[in-house]
Image (cartoon, rainbow, N blue to C red; front, side, top):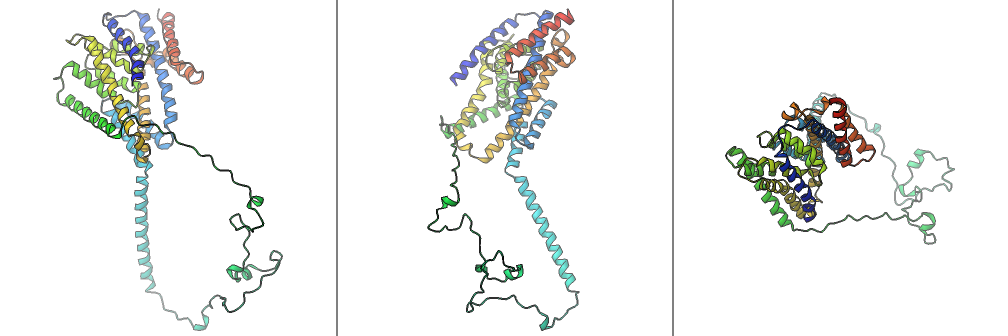
Length: 445
């Protein structure tokens, strides 16, 4: 945890400084700045699309997970709400649970067996009814078939020709031999004579290599892990109820904390999945302007640490014009966005030794992972729709990158360079910003 905090702090401090600077900037920026930001956004969308493809290659293990990734991305594009994304992941987990444990197959097999048994009963009843109308025919005693020959223990067994392979015995004659009189070819399971070693006839089998599954020591007990998960679940439900029952009646600080706390719960998808939610719950209420949101979204890629540090930038801007200082808003946002992830990880860490061996847990985890990967594709689509900034587009919340072929080229170049040429994400994003400025210099100026 201490290591993760050290990785987050530099980027969080940088984003807070950026928020302070942005808060003193006017409503209009120079055109080259808009061109730079549009290029950065285009390259960012390409990098996130590459991450989505790489995650999908690992998450898709069969046709079911392929369908779940597709549905997660498609359904996520249709609607945006704080409860909607977790519901999609829960539904994906339930789907793999039912499929992997073969509940539907068992029910279908039981219904098919029941149907076949009922059909058999109906056919047998129909046959019995038909047999009653058949004419009765008496068979003379001398026409009955004689029973097959048998061998008495008092009589000697028939002799077998010395050379059975060259014998002219037919299959019928061989079938009348007693069972223990038929020669059985020697197999590797037969008992060897004492003067013949098995190694002389059959080579020794090489033992199969044994593999050991690594085990990780549990840092916390399962009781503490269960307690943390229960406390987190209660806090999540409490905050969700307060937001629903008291809309507009709670202070800005609590609204900020609740929005980021609930958004940070979607830890499976990571930063790209959370960004559309942050836009919904920061820009829509008017706490952060669309232009400032897009500025921070473009510049967060150049800062170290996870994309969750974007919440620090938004928290500082959301408390502007209120009695809450900007640094307090940044701290509220920092703890609200990161606390759910730390608590969930610690809780499952205490239960991991027991849960990792459970088939139902592995099934649920497989589906939730596939659903989260689908939501990354949703994030790619939503970021694509607001990536172009500048002029009226910035004031209105951004325009689709597809409106400018040059930005489409930047997005595709970032994807291709990272996929097949091994270009790092920071380098690709820097190239995208350079391409945005080149776009302004060639086509706009």
